[in-house]
Each structure stands twice: as C-alpha cells, then as structure tokens.
Image (cartoon, rainbow, N blue to C red):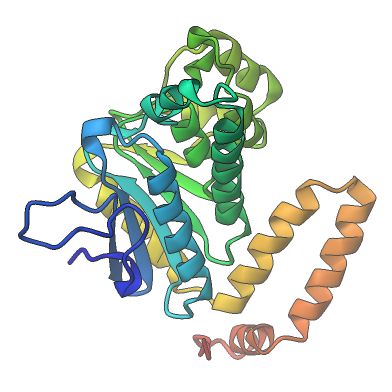
Length: 284
C-alpha cells in the first residue's frame, strides 16, 4: 500500500487528501520487509526533478537513513519516463528574475547536488529501478544510486549539449560510474543508449523484461536487506571514501576499517557461524 512519506507530508504534497480533487503526491512510498520504495509520481511532467520533487525525495532519503527498520531503498517511477531531468519550465520561469535567474539556478543546482550526495552518503544501499527513459539529471539520479536494474524499454542520455546546456552536474555522477571515453561520448553527443549498452559501460547492473522489472529489483533488494545492517553501512561508506584516495591511502584506510570491522559483534558472529558451520544470527 502506498502512502505519504513516513506519515509526514513532504514538500509538494501538502494539499493532497485521498479522494479529493487535489494534486497527487509527487512521491509515493511503500515499505515491504525493510525495503522502502520511493516512486517518482509526476508522469505528466515526465517525472522532471522539480525543486519540490527533489525536496520530497531528499526528505524521504534522510528519513530512511535514520530509520533502523529500513534496510534498502529502491527509487522507481510512474509512467513511461523514469525522469527527464530538471524541470525546464521551472528553470525558464526564472529568466524574468532581476538577476536573469542566477540566484534561482544556483540554488536549484545546489539542491540537486545535495540530493545526489544524500544517496551516496546514505548508510542504506539505494537501487534505481528504471522502467523507461532517464535523461540529464534523471540519468544522474541513476548513476548516483549504488545499484541499478533497468527494463529493456529503458534508455539513457545526457542530452544537454543539444539545447546549449551541457550536463555538467550529471557529468559528476556519470564520470564516477563509467569510463572516460564512454562518459565523454554521452556528454558530447547527447545520444541515447539502450540498457545493454548501459550495462556494458557500467552505468547499470542488469537489464530485464518489463514485466519482471519490479520483481527482479525486489529480489536484489531483499538479498541485500538480509545482510547485517552495520556491516553494510560500514562497507558502503568505505567504498565511496576509498575511491577518492590515492592507492596507498586507500589501502591504509581500508585496513583500518577492516580492523574495526573485525572487532564488531557482527563479524564475531559471522565468522563464528562460518567456522561452526551454522547460519549466523544477526542482532540487527
């Protein structure tokens, strides 16, 4: 059953009351066995990342990070488009501002950057479930997630170059997922790639038939949700931190993390269970 975020009405859905003639929520949520599904719900606007939708998504991610019952987060979308990126109509409206929109654009792109970083910094693994087209900041959203499962109907692009707005912020996430040549080709040509190509270059993990997209994503989510929570948190944080370090520093940091991990109760139980040939009993 879908609901509003954590019982708290997020930005963009303040006037939504089921059964009344009001705007539907921008973000739908549902929780099953520790897996929180966040579903972008602006199909009429191609799930464009408006300021309100980004605020709702950021609020939900922050809530999930603090919720011990949430093990994994899945980001999905309603309609044929996963997300077309920034809301160009929202951007264009600020052309009439006294500063030609400079302050509004800076605030919006800063907000988007904070959202993407919240995904990376979240202690919970975040999986993108892509049913359709993901372009520009929508592609950035996919690239920012820890894992991604896509339908054969999915397509990906960073087409800002075609409208004179280079995908500079999407570039940050894209270039940290795929090789330089592949990233530059997407950024410079703006051309769409299909799911198989996205797997080849490392943008997503796998492609499945549309009718099994949700079930396949949930199988992956449930597999991760069954792992010990503190170990997953430790590992995700260490993964992203070491990526930005020189090789020697990365090994020194990772060695320190593993030392602390070895002293943790989860490692004691897990190793003990392995040696005793039994299933581990996780406390969390």
